[in-house]
Length: 128
Image (cartoon, rainbow, N blue to C red; front, side, top):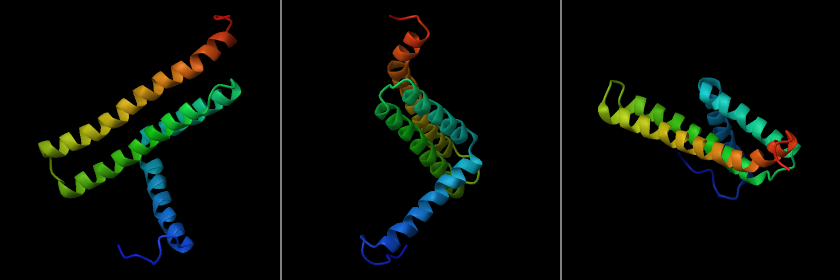
């Protein structure tokens, strides 16, 4: 891809942001898991705000999971392009990218339980 001048150019940045947004939109349209993860992120952030729990760890975990899902989508597309047929190395690449999303999701779940669990238990009257 050619450069459109200075890295500080607003026009160049806006164009790059458009490409990035197209990637997010494509992932949202084509990946059911991404849509589920977006919904989970919205619920987790809303809960943190409603419970006055720390928002930063929730936002960071949600950002990590969503970013890895986008990277997973990109890697799957590249793998399909490079290896249209079934190949054991293509399977490894796709499985490893999916594993990264799973690991981040499990970590996000644990952080969510640690951050949101105590205020939820207190609200339910199960913790003083």
